[in-house]
Image 1 (cartoon, rainbow, N blue to C red):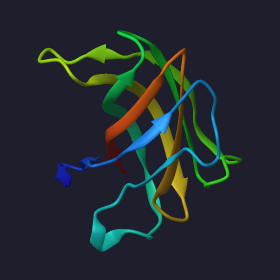
Image 2 (image 1 turned 30 degrees about the vertical axis):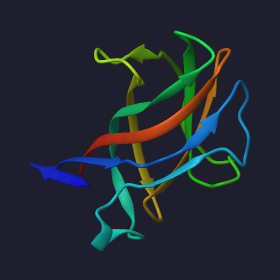
Image 3 (image 1 turned 135 degrees about the vertical axis):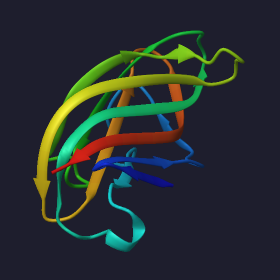
Image 4 (image 1 turned 180 degrees about the vertical axis):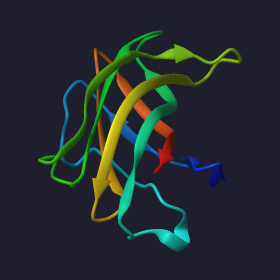
Length: 136
């Protein structure tokens, strides 16, 4: 789902089921295409501002996670530096969320970002990923 309002964009990817553990791995990542479906693959230019993750935590009641974003799937073109946040349990229970506030001005030949996550001590299964940005 994508939302656009006054050059502010938000896009959410749900239904994910990717496990992350205590180390980054090239086989454990999530690709996120920022632009609306009809524009995917076009050149991207904008200021990424917020990244929200939600999922389940196995083996603990709290943890920290570190997220970083790369332009490519093998994790060699860093766009969003490693940023740590605390996993916060939902009020109703069951899921854990974290919010990363970033200020990443980025111009790229297309709209794909690859997110890699690692935890402090447990396994985190990512179910949702949401990104907001301002487009120039």
